[in-house]
Amino acid sequence: MRALEMLERLERALDDSGGVAATGDPDVRDAAVAVIFRVTSGDALELLMIERASYAGDPWSGHVAFPGGRSEPADASLVSTMLRETREEIGIDLSASGRILGALTRLHPMTPRLPPISIAPFVELLTGDAPLVLSEEVAGAFWVPLATLQREDVSCDVEISVGGEKRTVHAFVHGRYTIWGLTERILRDLLSRMEE
Image (cartoon, rainbow, N blue to C red; front, side, top):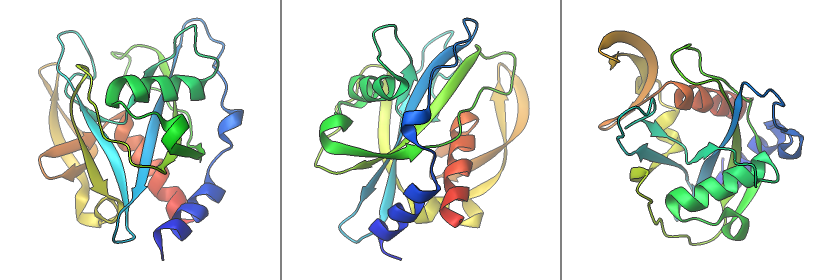
């Protein structure tokens, strides 16, 4: 199946991005991330991932993630949050060089050690040439072929260390990168919708 045909099918399986509203819960912080696709010259799909910079006290320090972050009072919507955070973190203005395909299911951390946050993932197609300009919050960025993430041998259980404690988690392993936690859950939602 051609890349654009796959994206059209995915778009039909996504939620309406305009229907994603803030939680309205004063104890929960809203956030939004961008799940960004691009079509390669070989008519394949790739997803953009970032590696967060390491900071003391940051629970997501050094993790592989999607660009995005917490909502600010000046953001008109969670789509605005996603666009602003993507521009700030990786220098891509998706309002100029992207198109929203829809939204994935909102999710929350499953461990009480993490701050109470509600994350809205928006799926975007990069429609123009947009060089990456990484902020100090981002240690690196890389494109992952969708076909790689769909391979069974890339999805596995791995042992990680969280706060000095060993845990076994579901993950995607791509080269030196281990994609787990909230990002792994977003990817599972995305991949399941591409199978429908």
